[in-house]
Image (cartoon, rainbow, N blue to C red; front, side):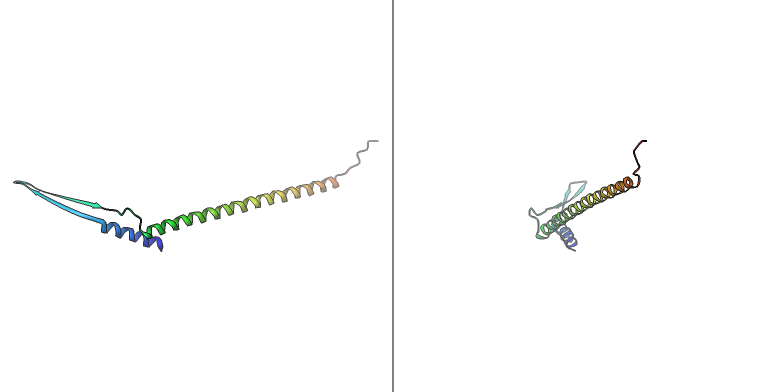
Length: 107
């Protein structure tokens, strides 16, 4: 909603800042008409523009923070999964060793 207000304010500001100048030069045989449109923009941002910029910066910072949190959570989950896999493989290896013990004596 704030963005819509800021855009509307900008359009209205630009429309009100436009001026139209028409000059007519007439000589003996020809009439020339020149129309010039010019716009003057304020040198200082309006409060609405500054508020919109601040909102955009805040939204970007929030997105970066959330992305960082998700990245850390994914890394933690990956480490936990690797640890669990290693533990399971170690347990399975011990079971295999116990089940395959044979007499290594040669008579």
